[in-house]
Length: 96
Image (cartoon, rainbow, N blue to C red; front, side):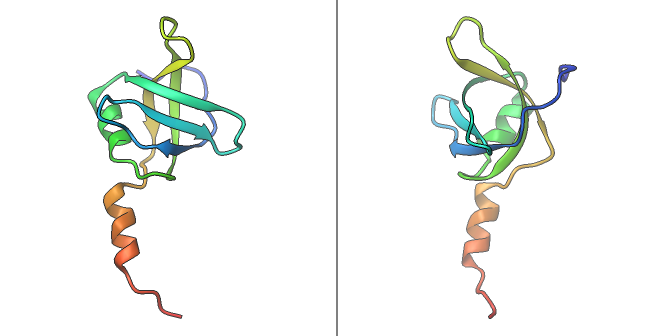
């Protein structure tokens, strides 16, 4: 279930998900960084796990009160650029 609050501003994936399931997001404005440590659903976790470094995502977050400045990703709006999509684009030749 998505909270009734508006999603955060679009965030960039600063550090893709590591082996422990943590990832770092930064607002595209550069004003805030989020350490995401938990996920509301398997689908949210899997979507963000496929995200390429530097891709932009609009995500609903809620604070984890027991973990300092850590966050739970509740929902992802739209898709994300995946690692496979980015590597495929890099392999394409450019026409000038």
